[in-house]
Image 1 (cartoon, rainbow, N blue to C red):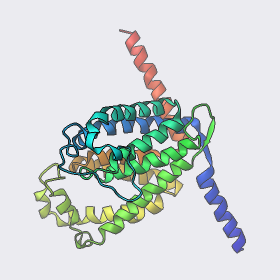
Image 2 (cartoon, rainbow, N blue to C red):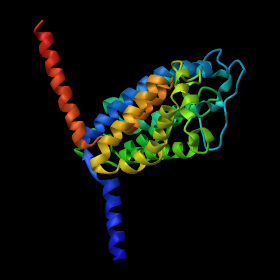
Image 3 (cartoon, one colour):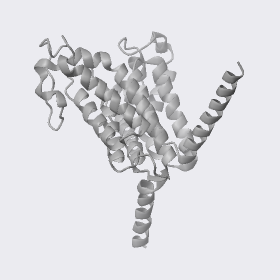
Image 4 (cartoon, helix red, strand yellow):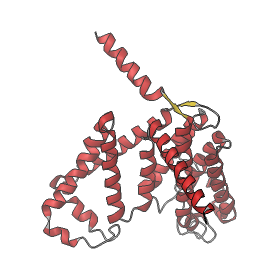
Length: 303
């Protein structure tokens, strides 16, 4: 009986990680992820050039790059003259992202994207936030999948394990975030969101009025903990509840985007959520886009 249970568990694990999906679904994720990376590096350009560029804080001697164990950077050997190379590196980064989006040399492109992303972000002494760490993780996982041919053009069916790794990574992020939060008395008392939203550095509006609604603050605070510690990590794997949990997560992050200045965090989290879309979801999206394109073309031709 124990052997049968172990065998069944192994078969379920094998299906979870090594089942296949359509190349169309993986191509949809590849293109969307590349579009996000393009936006991310445009969004982050000011920070990167402020740190590495001509007259940047490294060249000016105002700050020095970090040298952390096991965190490499292509820029490590020419800190004294980074301004000369910053534009070629930046152009190469965007070029590799474009190649990956179009499906040209996906293996080399994905490897180059990860190497350059790590090179840009690893040494930063200032300007990093949680979104940057998650981008490094995502580019690493996508690189592994690309090296295995999961994002290459031409295949009809590909293994789905890169998306499963992204799913597990998001689950771990939520769970660890919840565990980290409950270490603070404000979260255990249910008042944390009042202080978070009231922080002038992150809050978009004046939420002082929330002091008059302690039960509302308590409900949102405990609701956040419930989502991160139990709702997402446990229930997202239940097929009938998957859509409900994902919609709840999207609503949570839209609420964060509307109330807090953490714009980069929203985009990188959306990439994790895309990993939960099924083959049928991607087929429906492609069909919908094709229908919209047909309507658009007909509208243009009718003018």
